[in-house]
Amino acid sequence: MTNKLSSSVPTDREVVLGILNNSEDALNRLYIGYFPMVLQFILNNNGDEDDAKDVYQEAIIILYNKIKSGDFELSSKLKTYIYSVCRRIWLKRLAQESKKTNNVSDFEDIVTVEVDLEQHEEKDLQFEKMGSALLNLGEPCKTIIQDFYINNLSMQDICEKFGYTNTDNAKTQKYKCLQRLKKLFFQS
Amino acid sequence: MRNDIELEGIIEDYLQGRLTEAEVAAFEQLRTNDPIVDHKVVAHKVFLDSMKQYGNVLSLKEQMNNAHAQIDVGTLAEEFRPHPSFIVNLWRKNKSAVAVAASFLLLTIFSIYSIQHNTKQNGTYEVMRREITSIKNNQNKLVRTIISSSKADKGPVRSAKFGGTGFALTANGYLCTNLHVVKDADSIYVQNNKGDLFKAIVAYRDTQYDLAILKIIDSSFSPLSNVPYKLKKGGSEMGERVYTLGYPKDDVVYGDGYLSSKTGHYSDTTQYQVAISINPGNSGGPLLDDNGNLIGVITAKENQADGATFAIKAKYIMEALKAIPEDSLGRKVVFSKKNSLQGLSRTKQIEKIGSYVYMIKVYN
Image (tube, rainbow over all chains, first blue to last red):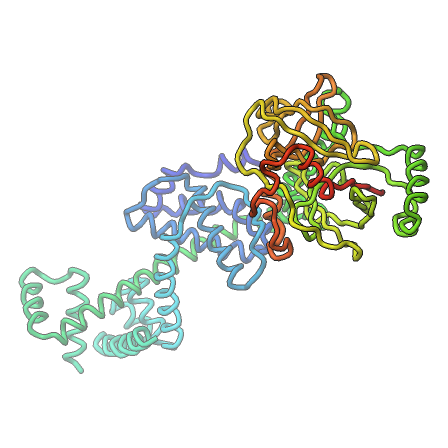
């Protein structure tokens, strides 16, 4: 089991470089490599598989942002870092649901990750805000905005996709959508 | 409206670096001149950043979900899931706590065992509590019935199993003795030098120093006058003349000697070594110096060496006393007042102390 794990887990260096180069493969291997560790921790501390997935993905996002932001220093093993982040998130959640949190069963060493978590919480709030703003925006605005800003479609593509008679009409539509979205985003 | 759309387009191009140098300069001029435009730029930047981050996280999540789909979560979960059995689960979760508790328990049992037996077995350290044989006791009982028939119905019917010595710490009936004297007691009676029996309970156990504080709870007990001796806080010097009173038999016995070492058995710094002859039953007796200061509690003797008796230093009595709420001790705690024995001759001292030294009878 351990052999199988260690052979499929990429080295810390590979992960950092892979994420910086937007390598999907590195992320995949990272994800698959350390999930069992987190699953074991959550299952043994009052959680289920879905909790494990949630917590683990949040931790990967934190790691991803940290690497992407460029100030990532490998002060501990990635494994330890991921474990510590997951542990912190999960204990926090347990506390919020006022479940029992003493006697945590630990399987790995831990490092302090409080600062990273705080930064992440801020970003996560923005993410939630944007998500709910987009949801409230409704169709077709939501798709137009997402196509333009996230999927990087050109105005021309959007014009064809939504059957506007000319790009000016599409632009006007996009502008209206954007104004509403901004309003929703900044007000919430 | 058209202008707004144009402006928005320019702002976006500006933020994404799609303007030419001249256009940037012109636009920045506009920004400095028009705060409304400037505000729009800032707001749009925040918005674009959030949107970009949102998009990144969204795609990251999608990637992760794809990766997640490749994992056989069910099998893994089966492997890691806490065992369904409650006992196994409890054991797994609390392995370390259980281990600590178990080793502590083992250690405690072992040390109690070694204090009780081991030292006896290799014959070097013998605690001085008296095992009262049934024959002796029958005689004792007989004598007591004759002397004071009124007491016969009061004391316990069964004969005491162990005996030791104790001494008053406070006027209201707190006594000090060795823990090994009373440790497995079902009930405890204390007897003063006039032969009066009082029921007592253990108020505090100090397993570390083998001390016990007893409390007389008998309704017939009337408070003593102030305790004459004083608890000596500091250490005593070698060669100091010391004496003790104890109950190795049914009457109080005086023993006299000198402090022969500042450390006890195997250089135990919590004890003194005293050259004084004592016998089973002396355990828990007070050790006093020439001035009537209480310097220790007789505990044990080395039975392979002659005249090596061990006494727990008096400062540990104080520590034990601290464990008892101050108001239940009453005002007359020994170490807080003047020593009224100072300057008296030895016989006068003994006369005064006599009624504060008790025989401890343990029933189980």
